[in-house]
Image 1 (cartoon, rainbow, N blue to C red):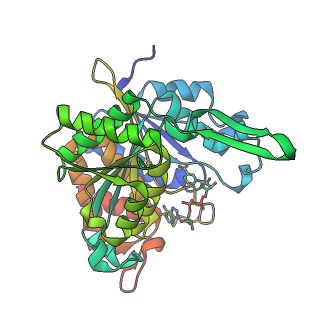
Image 2 (cartoon, rainbow, N blue to C red):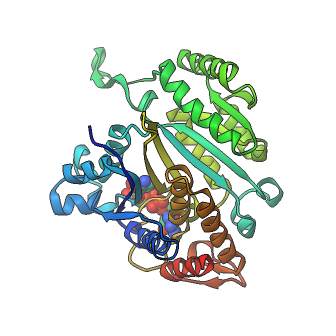
Amino acid sequence: MIKVKKRKILLLPGDGIGPEVILEVKKIINWFNDKKSLDFEIDQELVGGCSYDKHGTPITDEVFYKALESEVIMLGAVGGPTWDNLEFSKKPERALLKLRKELKLFANLRPAICFKQLVDASTLKPEVVSGLDIMIVRELTGGIYFGEPRGIKPIENGERKGINTHTYTTSEITRVARVAFDLARKRSNKVTSCEKSNVMEAGQLWKEEVKELHEKEYKDVELSHMLADNCAMQLLRNPKQFDVIVTDNLFGDMLSDQASMLTGSLGLLPSASLGAKNKDGEMRAMYEPIHGSAPDIAGQGIANPIASILSFAMALRYSLDLDKEADVLEKAVQDVLNDGLRTKDIMSEGMKETSTSAMGDAIISKLQ
Ligand code: NAD
């Protein structure tokens, strides 16, 4: 069994704008090492399309083992049109799925925060989204994306049948619900659990297990249950009613994308995928911006690095037990936005347009 090495950070920049935004994260990690005498050990490797180009596979065994022994993985993004026509097993995204599955990263945390400086970037009215701060906890390694049987098979009369199976067990539900309750205790102490218990047995089990765990261990947290379709509607109607939302893999995929777009800007939102703690309290985790590799702007030096930098702030908070440093980094980002600095994707009248690296430098100067 491969041990997790404390404070080891593996950078996997990936494709497209991935290397550009992860470079800014690297500068910040180096700043913490130099100025705050933190002892992060950084390593960097290829993953995704660039790994396929060099090694014929989206992730080599060597890189996979390095990921296994790293406390934190910082991923940029993978994929792009160059690799769209590769066979399924060679596609860049297979590397991500392998990492999530083999590292057992079952809890995906996606904050949707509406920065007050950017409230106009949302398609919703400012009063609906201003001050928005939701955390969506999506189950990431179970449910219909992994359930068996699955496949496409021929049936009578020349038709074909596509099959996927939606399954959840008690332990799969309770471990992710526990993450949500623990997070809520550090926030506004409210959890909304979403499923389709009205039409799906797995949804009924989800609701029962969350309820039971709440009764046994988390009575101090306010819990409500909501049907996932209603949650989609409520996210548009009155998103500020939510604090932490916990839901399964499929509904979480959709609800978290919907919630992130309430804030109007892909280049600002971080995410974390957390595994279980072992008996020594060690946990594997991968942090990444929610955006993709943005091939349309790659190589131009205009990508917004804030989503990746805030992903590192999440790593400081959730993996490295450095809450104070996370606060400082998040505040530096806010300060830079207050100064009117904007990358092209969030540029508006009267603001100062800046490049990827100048944005990173400005954030570092606020850390000083
Ligand atoms: P995308 O997120 O890459 O881009 C969508 C739009 O947002 C583009 O116009 C892009 O320029 C812009 N954008 C995204 N991030 C930005 C940033 N940091 N700064 C400024 N603008 C930004 O989504 P897409 O175009 O659907 O996908 C492109 C590729 O990325 C595809 O190959 C897809 O499979 C892959 N992808 C990877 C991940 C991942 O690695 N986790 C996630 C989503 C998509």
